Length: 322
Ligand SMILES: [Zn+2]
Image 1 (cartoon, rainbow, N blue to C red):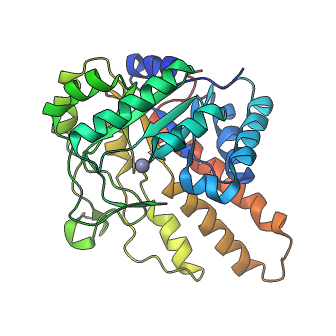
Image 2 (spheres, rainbow, N blue to C red; image 1 turned 90 degrees about the vertical axis):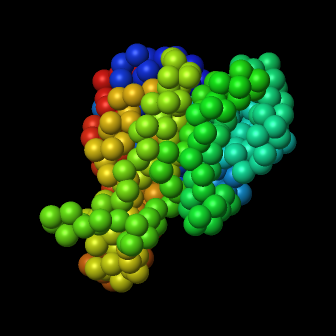
């Protein structure tokens, strides 16, 4: 099937109490690992491209890789989405270039300015059959070129959401309820130790989510920064020469709870990076004589696939939903 927008995907996810995974793609192995996992679990998927990914791999290469994945995995609905568009021009370029969904992220701007630019993108996108995700509230952390310093993040203010959605006409809304970009979502001193000696971060603000849902019944909500940073992969990185002290993510049970609510899209990037890197480090440690990139990229691609399957089954609940 051709690329789809998120309209039908989100309606089914909202009604079915699950979320669709949005995974960032940067190269062929990542596209293959994600889409093979979705094909095997019969899960819809959003492949998202950041400004940084476009700069790294080039727009045309990424679009053609996604087209190839569509041909190889004909059963699964695939949406191609721009992650964190930071200007009308960037969104327009992706809309003109074959994307079926774009995010305009003006969350760091004043409310009225966020509305004005989002509305401009929505008008252009809708005229071209493309849907738009917007954002209210800001997440801490680093994701490609989006950097928000500690202490500068703010939860979404539920009292703003109706006016924002009404005035902009956006199709889905990313909100800030305590998730965060990157592999270092919390400082150890923000966390508590559980009985197994594992650091547990502060819980997500489900009260904020509930208040947003009450004001926007039936409207699809998006969570960014929702990697769990599984500790077994952090330990693997550190064991094989890496240095990632105190990498902490969002517990999968909390994300599972969010996926059952109005949250229809959950963004996961760091966990894929982590799985790939841990695997490549282990491979080099165990096979120092290898120098053919296929020798380490093949297991790295399998690690991406395993991680995406784990997310589909443990977190998203999107298996067998095509
Ligand atoms: Zn994000």
